[in-house]
Amino acid sequence: MNGAESLVRTLLKGGIDVSFANPGTSEMHYVAALDKIDGMRCVLCLFEGVVSGAADGYARMAGKPAATLLHLGPGLGNALANLHNAKKATSPIVNIVGEHATHHIQYNSPLTSDIEGIAWPVSAWVKTSMTSNAVGPDGAEAIAAAQTAPGNISTLILPADTAWNEGGVIGNVPKIPKREAVSGEALSTAIELLKNDKKTLLLLGGSTLMEKPLEVAGRIKTKTGADVLAEGMNTRIQRGVGRLPIIRIPYPVPQALEILKDYQQIILVGAADPVGFFAYPGKPSRLAPEGCRVHLLATPAQECEQALEALCDGVGANNVMSELQKPNRPDRPTGAITLDTIASAIGALLPENAIVIDESVTTGRGFLPFTAGAAPHDWLQNRGGAIGLGLPMATGAAIACPDRKVICLESDGSGMYCPQALWTQAREGLDVTTLVFANRSYNILKGELAGVGAGNPGPTAKDMLSLDRPIIDWVAFSKSLGVEAVQVDNADDLCKAFEAAIAVEGPSLVEIVI
Image 1: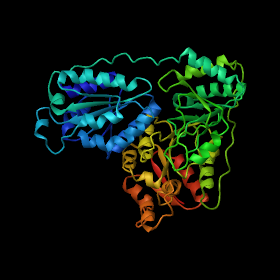
Image 2: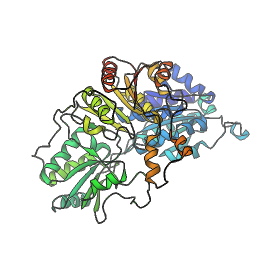
Image 3: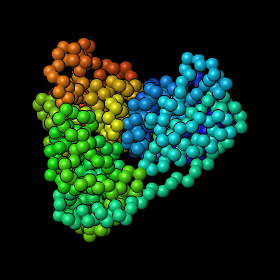
Image 4: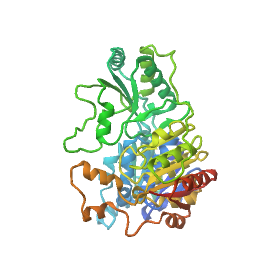
């Protein structure tokens, strides 16, 4: 058994059975091991940003890591933006990054780079395996590090000779540390805050946005009168009929300040002190009002769900009922394409148990109210803010949950960062329906230009914010990658096209001209 074979066997033993890959020469013995050993599903992606984004989507829905396979430092570098997003989402991922043979690195050939230096900003654990008999045990450490709360990125660097040399050993995954319980002091303080009659917000994040902890938060809300909100961008929210309706803090700073302005106390459960995405002249970075007390009950790495249950017990809310969402779908829209008719079409037709990948940016800011009363579904957002995650994340989510329809809400600008994901969706036959919102611009930046006080855009600025000359033909482009696609420019055709797409299995795309 060589080092590469020991690593594949270690990954399988540790429960990792999906590999998103874009290999090169240095990884050929690892590729051969993947071919030789049964049990690993290997998914080829045509760009490393698709690899890392798919691994993020897979982890969010499967609840466990996938492996990536990346070619040397430049391949890892290409994956960094979506690894940044995965890190912010606390998605567990095990990166396998090829390296030159140990004796070859000294010659500084063209692809030689500081792989560890590239890896550390997005990784909680980084190691280079220096001998073939260390590869398997190092891989086992990587698995444990990735699955340590709240979920981390591990990067194992595999020199070519440690992969091809004999003497491989299958590693045993160390025991995964249990999540830390919240302190008694933090809990008793939160209970006191909920009993003092001041206007209070429970701000939820991470694992607390799943159905069961949301229901517990709803009981606390009913008993105490505290409000419940989600962070602005979230890893995964379970929404729809029978679940606690929850809105998120808006992205625009003025709207966020308005929604938070009356709170005297904010209790954080798996969430962070709310701040703006960016700094703006004359506007605060922190969004909580001045004088508001912000109390941390539980970090994302702690036992957030148990903390909510203890809080519920502490305020005497165990026997009250949450006010759960009742069915309330909008009517099928007709007429012109507007932000509201798009939202209505999604809300009216969203299938039960769908997984919604939301990278709709400006177009989708008003989608949540229109979809709140749809059938139960999961809603995934871009926690890290680096655009280009939507199509890859939908790909990984579909691999994790092949029995569920994935709906990808994608802006045209963001979609062009990693459009190669469509090819992988076609090759793998993934059940993903993508709605592309073609406003043919980086529309969010038009608002940001004004928001930072940069004045009215002239011709140069307008050129940098527009996606015309030439206009991107999403239909022709998608078809060239093997994905059936149609274009619509009115709400009636949108409903027909969306309904047809979700009625069949396999990838499809609807370009919505705004």
